[in-house]
Length: 113
Image (cartoon, rainbow, N blue to C red; front, side, top):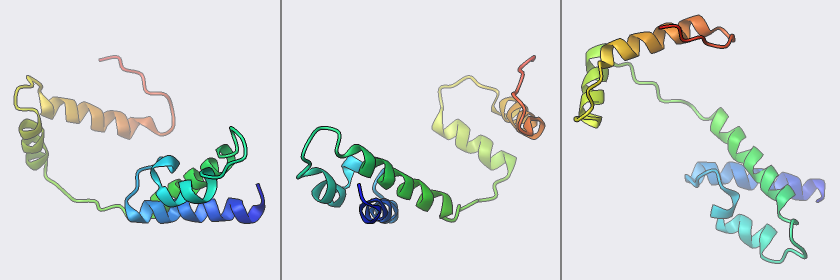
């Protein structure tokens, strides 16, 4: 695979992200037409697929994240609405999860509760 082909597949992955195509090179019709349709042998599509995926991931990581600030009550309401039959103490579970994330700091989490 040439550098130009690698760069093209990478750019196609970025464009696919922008179009809302899931992170699966074979779900991108343009990618399939360019790199897979006329492949000479089995396995020829692996390197372009890896480059496409790298482009998709790069675009995903660079995309802005829409953070919505919600109150605890709003989050609890969403949990109750999404899982009406669940018998879960959402408030307790969310507090434990938040505490664990605060304590994590790159170390393996140990659950001793």
